[in-house]
Length: 263
Image (cartoon, rainbow, N blue to C red):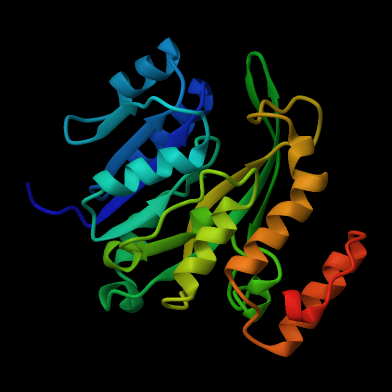
């Protein structure tokens, strides 16, 4: 088969109603997209959603092994054939006409890594389905700065990566949080993505107790934050003394005194 222009990799975990929303937004694009859905759990509703919404050229896999999006994305990377690779969480979605607008950008036609604009949607997630609360568009122009070596700046779903640029890269399956940020830094170390004025993803957030996000959100707010930040810092050294000092300030604020030479 001919190589597709775009592959989207969607890891999922027993959230069929949200996955349906994500897949519908992909299938409504007026451009061909190879879709790879990787589930890390047995779930009849997920099976049904993929059977109904995926085409014969798409891929749906129920993988074995420990749950987690990193291993699912890594499997998707092994299978992807698109000239460009995009990642979409199962609870997010794409804006209409995103892919044609993306492919029309000169930077994409030149084969560069890019990042686009998005919107943040606040919702409640009730048993009967999501309840929309508000939506704010976010212009990402200028957001990707050297400060990305201190903390994450741009949501993963706003990036589009040339597949060739990702050769040999993987998501770290041992991280509790921030594996997206770690992966993006590995890409940035190879090529700094450029901004394109395209509206890409709808990033859905839940700010109350109705959330059904995977796992215990406290993992992203306790000592795991410090462990994973230090892990990322060790893997991706500060490119300048100023960035190292800002890393020290962040760690100090979390109650971890460290020397710039360690970061």
